[in-house]
Length: 562
Ligand code: NOJ
Image 1 (spheres, helix red, strand yellow):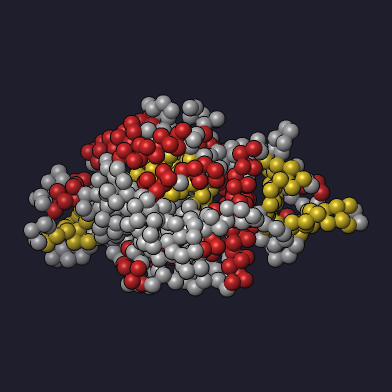
Image 2 (image 1 turned 90 degrees about the horizontal axis):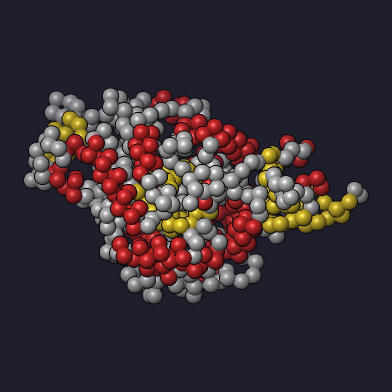
């Protein structure tokens, strides 16, 4: 498989499986790897090119598996290494690739390495694998810096040894206190992760999504952060460089990883979870000798706003072109409010109250429109399990079932991410809707989800069938995927919240139009008249004095020949 301009990953549609919530084969209420295997034909029929499976390593599950206790094994509740191998083989037999997650920024505090820290002397080699520093203050009672955890509260905790002795040292955890940050200045850490990559590459895995890819290297001067300045500059839209994100030294790590991936046939592939302050900084990760692709979260944050979407697309295309890499688009994942809810009128990026039924319908229409618009863009696209069913965010989970550390660390003031992790409804009228053989599911499913199940949406004009048809169309249209994009302009696109682009092709060019305005728009005929795919029912051919026009309703996107 080439790693150059025709490589599969340059235009793939990759489906994210959050394994604990996808399908439960044994009835313990937790999804598992055999559950994914049982549903592999569903994924093939959906029309995706690859799946990415979120962590399935042994884990105390303090952060949904992103707290890894052993990187060369599988959580017994989720399956075995041999199950993963079978899944890879089954996917390959269907011409699909399989990505898994690697979590290199931190381990679980239950990982053997951290346990060794707790049983050894200060300053021993075991300590040098983590970011551990003396506390400030006369009795070292203060953390070494004022850094805040992404999950609320301080990013340092006092290091208390296994024998109960409280030391003068603190360990860094940019996330939960059960996720100590590794010290990537230590060559032993680098060697260990190359070896872990090799373990899974040898098993046949096609690539890795890299968790917190931008966070591995910390500013070794450990400066305090002026958070009031950070807030001010964020409000002004000015990027700032944090002492623990996007440090220059991180790129060296990925050059080593790329060298390893390129020794395989076919070459293995990386996608970084890179939250970068600017599209320019994001593109640095995709230089030819580093990561193949990286999520582009700037686009995800652009909402249903034509100007912001266009700005984000322009900056992304420009910067990726400079490094010769394809962009990667995503609208939902396991950390973010599902886009059917997020894009509903009047919703913020962090809603706490569900939209009204009318706005929920518009949210779904907008989500479908945004998906179709995104699938037409150059590059690859990630889908998140359940978005093909139009699942909304579940905002009303009771506190006592919530599991996200964000909920606990914020003392219940931030509801966290459980609402996008509710298990998938597959069939039937009552929970667990075929998620498992019985009624169990690790997060409760809403009682009104029967009509959203795969079975209920298998026929007719459903969101599931819209995804199937859009993905099939994307496959058969030669202009989609990697390549050029040309914006189409007319009076309409300049004034009305309408975006239109063409994907050029000598015989079969394709144009995509998105209507984010709140009224019908009538398309100039030069945009094309043959409709290839619509995101919803609001498209009509209407006669007028100067001939026939395509009229597109609000919250709708279409693909046209032209
Ligand atoms: C990003 C992952 O997507 C998220 O789920 C996790 O909590 C953090 N990284 C920490 O690993």
